[in-house]
Amino acid sequence: MPCEPIYFKRDAKRFFCKDEFIRYFEKKVMKTINKWRMLRRNNKIAVAVSGGKDSMTLLHVLYKIEQKFPSQLVIVHLDEGIAGYSDIAGELVKKIAEELNIPLYSASYKELFDFTIDDIGHMYKKKKMLAPCTFCGVWRRWGLNYLALKAEADRLATAHCLDDEAQTILMNVLRGAFKNLLKLQLYPKKAPNIVPRIKPFREIPEKEVVLYATLMDIPYVDIPCPYARFGQRWDIRTWLYEQEMQYPGTLYNILSFHRQLLESFKNIEMQEEVKKCKICGYPSSSDICKAHQLKQYLLESKED
Ligand code: SF4
Image 1 (cartoon, rainbow, N blue to C red):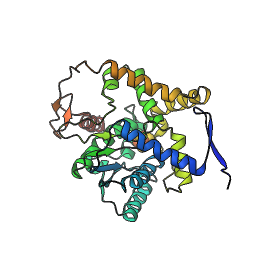
Image 2 (tube, protein in one colour):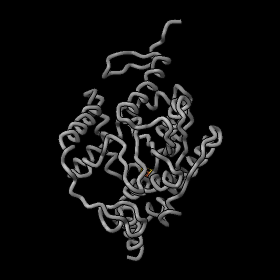
Image 3 (tube, rainbow, N blue to C red):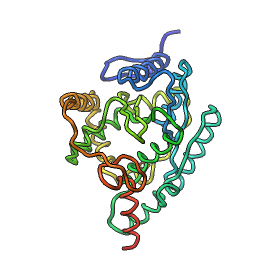
Image 4 (cartoon, rainbow, N blue to C red):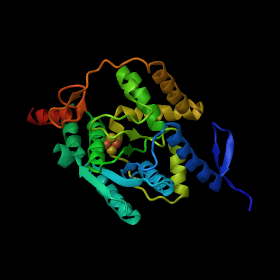
């Protein structure tokens, strides 16, 4: 049967039919994992699954790839406490964990930090304070590491794709956060109390993740977070999308720029002292880590 083209990859200037695209996508993930030495054969991998398209696709692809290796998968999931969003996502993650028979480790922001994102959303609307995404992003990082440590995982896999990576690099540039740019490491890095992170989708555009999910009938929660538009990331995302449409390859060029930057600075020691957070004991650049600083900020804002 002739191959029916379903996707034109603009930067490669070629068409793909369904089977070709599926093969291309899975091979690309494997190549990315090997290129950045993300995994070893018998690693225990904690896959961060929110229930959205990217993470459900990551779980699906890693489940397929890892059948060939003696590795082990566990799912780590955080409940942000966003009504009509987190509850639906949580149910789907539970269901997929049962179906695939993968151990599930979950926790909520309420259990870990005493606040839900909805609590913060209410406070944000009442008074001028940091936007919900600021808390959510920092707590997610902390919470996923906490769960991966609990699961005794060797790696923490997140579904950040090319678009996410380019947005993060640009956000750090716009904020003048040079040190943060250097901290966005390419290879999994070991440190006490930190499970090395890997991003197998870091070189794959979001639209290809969506296409793969659609072609493979992967279930996911397709409800936008009600707070998504409050953060700076939303504006950068929209702008970058337009740039990529007009100048294909822009996203990949940003990633490549960042890689060259890291290579130029690889022999320079970061002068930052690594301390232990007085509350959780995790590595921190100050006496209290960012996640717990934000909790204290909320407790103080509540009293104002
Ligand atoms: Fe959290 Fe913001 Fe993402 Fe919503 S959009 S899930 S608040 S980071």
